[in-house]
Length: 591
Image (cartoon, rainbow, N blue to C red):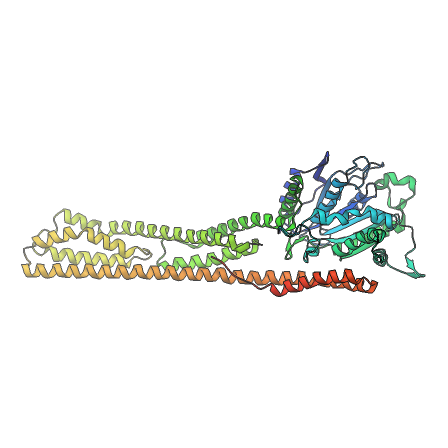
């Protein structure tokens, strides 16, 4: 179970100092410790519209985000509050309260536009908070949405400098919730009651015409409809009498408007129940460290004068996580081999089998922790490192076997060597007695288990090093005729040749086993990569189908309203999604 992060209060995530956006290192440290998936809810709106009050309610607290009590914007930059998700166990709720837009003291529309864009990019649910009804003034105040195409890039392709025509743009964007404060209208049309969602859709209807006034009317509505096909609306009555509003967070429940209390509860329930985990393209869930990386990438791009690029942010994150995935996989491999392997192994195959089991698990660890591994760059690195560690284990195994066998030979043949020095065999018949004793000791050597793969070679080298001793005993043994000595020399040569042949066969067998292991390793990489690509493709297809359904729904609305040109533009995006879905075929190019 991942540890919960429960901050006692909000901290500044992105400071806004003299028009410069700067990331707060302390906030990043907090995010880096959140291993759970995060549901990110951001709220944006004009200053002094009660954004912070709603965020405190989502956190389940009366106090937290600063409400302020004057006409000045109280929140500066973007503030963050991380709390355990009240409705989703093993999830963290990240609340982002943003600096009020349109602060007359700041007088910096560009800075406001970046705050707006960052809130969109970082959140899984984007709440736009405004006062009163949705009229043209409210739409004009939401001009930031029309600037998104100038503030964000979907990908880094030179020919595509905006997200305007990107078919997968919607998949990056959050759900859109419009909260209307101090709402006084009756929700009805032609005497029939309507929902707040119906009211929002009616307010987003386009006006026919190509004149400047119609364009000004339609642009923000088109952008909301295009960028946020998944949208919701909530209305709120006045929370209390005007004289009490300055200390809203201090009011007791009985001092608040009952309708307002009910509306806030409904809003909180919906947000907590329906807000999804923040995801990257392909449905990859975002946790604290991933959110940390997104914040850094986007703010650094803005600070350097570039446009935040969603594709670059994902690739930058992939670089970090895939490097870490390789390290995790190697650490797992070494842990498993350390637990399973007892050197020296009896055979090379025994070691290779243990390697293959640990390698398979290591690849699984990598696949679980990696994503967007373009051209399998990091999987290749993992493969190379696993092969290097296999070679290292083989060398360790050979050395352990050699050391073991040398010590064993010294222990078994040591007394024989001492007898030779004492002249025990320097007598008639001594040579045959020496050879008989040597054969008995060889048999004893072979009977000892777990000598490892160097057993034959070490024994062969040892016996070869003692050939001069045996030859001297042979030549000085007076009980043997010259013919018998010659026959013995030929026997020794034949025995030596047979041992050399056996060693050659052993080396050839080892080489074949190593080649076979290399092929099995390759096949394991391909197998797991194919399975991962199939899973990723299924996720991507599901994401594209969801996007396609939203766009088809929006196209149907446009056709009903009689806007054929806009419908045709949307049809192009729909075709792009459909073509992309057909071309999503798994391909393996690794190692």
